[in-house]
Amino acid sequence: MRLPAIFLVALALLSSHFVYAATWDEPWQETVIKESGSFVLARVTTFDPKKGAIINVLRTLAGAPLAGPVEVSGFYSLHLCNEAGEEAGFRFEGIDSCYVFLQKTAAGYAIATPTSGFAAIKHSKVAATYRHSYHQALVPQSVYEPTMTAIFQHYHGQPYDADYINKFVSSTLALAPARRNSAEQATFFLQHVALETTYHLGLTTYCTAILPFLRDTTNFHAQVSATRALAATATPEAKQQLIKVLTRKSDRDFVKVQAVWTLAAYHPTELKHELAKIAKGASAQSNGFGGNDMDPRSCTQIPTVKEALDALVAQL
Image (cartoon, rainbow, N blue to C red; front, side):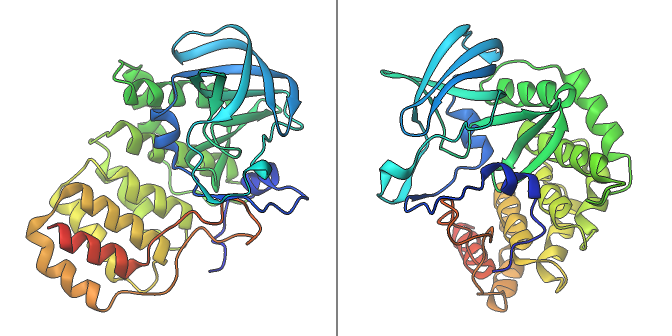
């Protein structure tokens, strides 16, 4: 499958001149956050691709408080597809400061995988993952910190700054869907953050604001985020719009699978017959994030549209 207009910042930060034999199924960001115990801002002081890194924790934003030097020596969500584990090394090279999701282990601390669980800071911007490390956004620290802190706190059953979140989401989604070009890129990334934050926090009051992004079939990343942002909004309108995604020829298969997964969150038994009918003619073409076959995350699986629909119908 051809790579869909992927955020180039992700490829730039995660690429390497080495050919990696080890491959893994990269976790989605909610898994990274849920399985971590601390969310910190740190400076990388020493780094070894095989052994790990020593980071100096500057600030704990959420979770168990940490300070000073911390040894990062393992991975807490690394599910290898190819067992060449010695090549599943650490990738802190060229990073001075970053945000890190840490899990305490017997040997020290771990990040999720070699390519997830940290977000590098470049010129006061964060190479941020809100969805998946394949799809990153470059956002100001002033936005990354409060939104990601709120997401961490929500997943760990703690209160978060709802006033800030609601102001940010409502003002950002009030703007017309932006494109990833030089003139609109900053807004494009902020809208990605707003939509994904809506998904993670299960916000239910933004359906009307989300729909323009869902209907914009020329804006792949906005559509994906919009389908996810509707996950907690099981209204008749949301269901109808997601059904339209599944029946429109202009929508990509990746977007359609996200729509199926959001519908699955609704458990829409009343739509079983309609979904079964759609499944009969659904695409069975291979699906996925695309990218370089040498990318170590290449075994991250996305089902075909037909597989996703058949699985949903079987559950209803």
